[in-house]
Amino acid sequence: MHYRSSFVIENILALFLIIGLTGCKQNEKSLSTDTSEVITKDWTLIFEDNFDKGLEQWNIWKSGAFNNEIQFYQPEQVTLNNGILEINIKREAARGVTNPINNALKDFEYVSGRIESKTLFGPSDAEGEREYRFMARLKLPPGHGMWPAFWTYGDPWPTTGEIDILEARGGEPEDYSSNLFFGREPSININSNTEIKHHIGKDLTKEFHIYEMIWRENSIDLLFDGELLHSYQSAPNNNINNMFGKKQKVVLNTAVGGWFISDRNSKNYVDSSVMEVDWVKVYKK
Image 1: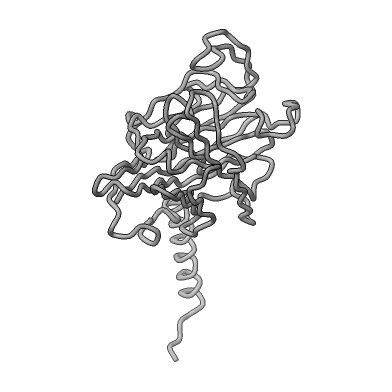
Image 2 (image 1 turned 135 degrees about the vertical axis):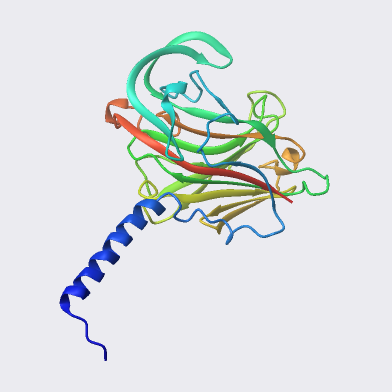
């Protein structure tokens, strides 16, 4: 048995503590960012944004939205902070167009942010294009009234479909929902009974987690931190087969209020919150 003085031991322990604390700060962003456990070599990475260079791959909204939401999306609310995309939501009066297809001016109670990928993605019959995998590492915004989302859709909605990988209610931090929409005419959804609720059992506003979707001709799988939560199979009520061969853009945003939030009294909502995005990736095979 080797003898070490208490002075040496104390200094070694102190050194490990310093290294540990420094490592935690340096690795806070990279925790769980390794996708090797959930992506096989068969997948080809075709889109990636680690939010450390700019937002050239995205269109940034300046508009109101739909669904009786009470936020106005403006570019100022979308910022980059040390490799993290931040969507900043706050209670602030704003006036702007009602939504992208209605230029009538409207008053809003909140401001928030929304980005959409300039590139559209989706599976087809072509070789190497039959499956698409969409992933994002997110920390959800806390607070009642917040409606964060990670989703895909194409124009005119919903004729190419909409896939809600994640929709969450800020007042229910351990749960989120997924959903599918499709229609043959603009603005008319014909899907029914497609919302799936996921109870995770941990506060999703406290840490980053990986949310993903695998889209095939006749199925859509939803995963959380690499584990399958639900598999939609093509059926008349979800029209997955009718979405095949169509392309959709990737969307990240946080709405406030609206039909998704049962409490419509905005006085009960938090005054500010932040949705954080570490990275977004799209694969195909």
